[in-house]
Image (cartoon, rainbow, N blue to C red; front, side, top):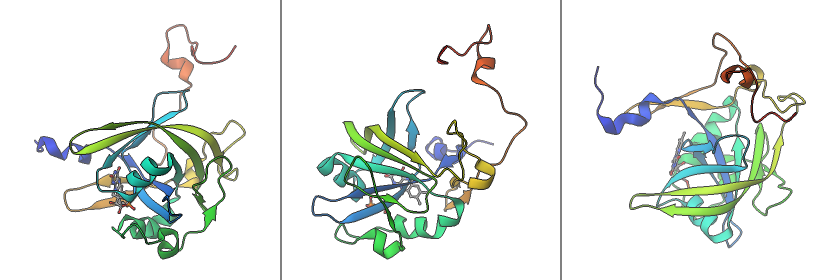
Length: 199
Ligand SMILES: Cc1cc2nc3c(=O)[nH]c(=O)nc-3n(C[C@H](O)[C@H](O)[C@H](O)COP(=O)(O)O)c2cc1C
């Protein structure tokens, strides 16, 4: 079956993060984000794509800060509330019933009840005609230790991080489950040694 090429977002299982920011006037904002990824491993940069009319984008430009919060599947209702296009003066923590999780390095608060919090500062904005790419640096990274082991690996079966599958009329929230196997990075290299692993 052929799909129109502009439906390419429908072939990817996508993450759902909540990005929290604060405006220059101190208004708290939260918005769901799926066009978001770490840039390779084991670096500190992340990348996200934003439509041009987003309070999140404006706040990142104004303050140079944002938090990437990873919500569990049971926060889907709050995520949907935050997806609505409230005007910039509306405190979206208040409307969505979100409680702040204190950031340690930046001014923008995280969101209580999430699984992980990446405090980020703006490194670069790449402005295109219809969207903008934001590159951020993670300056503080915290996880809820009930769902991560000592190495920081997520117990995804219990944590149930929110993900989604897009369709032409809407999206379905999902969360990851195990597939056939787990591998060590070392298995991806001939010689069986991960070049990024410290000796
Ligand atoms: C699951 C989901 C993922 C989304 N991902 C993005 C995204 O990657 N980039 C984007 O610009 N908007 C995305 N949106 C839309 C914004 O969340 C939505 O427009 C929101 O109202 C923006 O809020 P803001 O204006 O307060 O920043 C997404 C919405 C949902 C429901």
